[in-house]
Every structure is written in structure tokens, then in C-alpha cells.
Image (cartoon, rainbow, N blue to C red; front, side):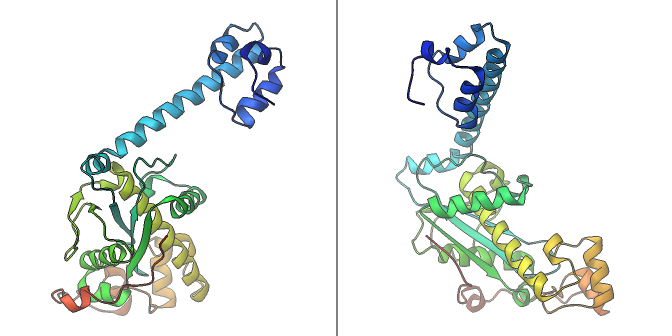
Length: 292
């Protein structure tokens, strides 16, 4: 339907207007909402309410995204344009690696629906956001620390190792790095750890989505290799189903032997003190990555 005046549009049926402005999501001309609200047709007034609600939601989403760019905007205004957000996924599971991601967003970038991955409960939505990020961002990369490294270093330091590998995998040197809750040892770029950063920084939220979706796909692949443990469902987390499977079927090579339920299944006592973090291990070859 070509662009028309409000007067012309109001001659259309309500179903035609609904198709245009709801189904096809055409921009609503200035004055159209007021005209629909004044229209005596009940359907027109119902359409006006629906469009008003969508408008308010869009406005609220825009404000939310602007707020989430607070840290990035401050850095962009200082001329630091390559701001990398970094986050990890998989600290608590009993199985599989810990995966980290780093992402550099374009200046002013706003992706509708992007948030901390823990708040996005729909896996399909997380995957759609991840695909959009991979298409749009300046650079992105993932890095991981393997089960053996988790058991040797402890999970906290293994998470830092995965984060550093993700930053090093970007292919560009960030001007600044924003990290969820911590800072990364031996990171060449200036950085800031932000408590609950995945809820406060859009760059960190982007990294959280990329890390989460990457790890979920990896665990789904391991489920095919090790059937019976439910890895595709719980992704290695210590659910009752997972712990029962370990006790019944045994411990796999992908299980973290420094974690209590795994040690218990193996008949082991308390784990030994982790070795001090070694520079040569922390600077080891980056794990497989992907970037734009």
C-alpha cells in the first residue's frame, strides 16, 4: 500500500489498517493514532490501543538500551571506540569447559531484546540474538578453558583464562575492556570490572549471550557422544538427574574431578589445593574461536 494521508487511510477498513500497521509493521503516520482514537468504529479504537501499547513498549526498550550503554558511551565520548565486553558461561556445571566471549559493539549499537543471557529464558531467542550479534558487531571471539585446566587451576582462574583467550581471539586490540565482576590478569588493554556487569553493560550482555549459546551448542554435541546423562537438557549443571546419572553410569572424561559430586562418585576426598597459576599455562595457545 503506498504512503497515504491520514484522511485516506481512515477510509480503509479496520482489517486493512491492522494488516498494514500490525502485521506488516509499517510506520504509523503522525496524527494517525489520534484519528483512530476519535474514530467511532470500535475496531479502530481497539487498533489505536494496540498501537499505543506498542509505541510505549518501543519507547521503554529504547530507554533500557540507552541505559545499558552508559559505560560504553562514556568511553566512546573519550575517543575509545573499540570497547570490548567480556563474560563467561559454565562456572557451576559439573561437566564440560568454561566458555568466555568478547564482543566489540559498533558505536551507539542497540539490539532490541539484548540482555543478560540469564534473563533470556527462550533458547531460540538467545540463538537469534547471537546470530544478529555475529552479523553486526565490529569483532567477536570465544575462548574456553578445558576440564583439565579447571581441575588444575580451579574454576575461578580457569574462567579468567577463558576470558583472556576470548579477548586475544578478537583479532583487534580493544581500546578498553569491560568485564563482568572481575578483571583479567595479563590483559594488555585497560579494563574495568563491573559487578553485575551483564545486567548493566550492553557489551557485556552481548558477550554473555555469545558465551552461553556457544557453550550450550557444545554441550548438546557432547550429549550425542555420551548418551544417558542428559547433557543436552541440563548442559552439565548439577541437577538431580545429572548427579544420579554420574552415580549410576559413572564419571566421564568431561566431568570436573575437582567438583564435589564428581569426587564423591569417584570415592575421593576433598580436592587438593590448586597449583599456583602459571604464566605459561595462562598464556597458552588460545582455544578455537570465531570472529567477524
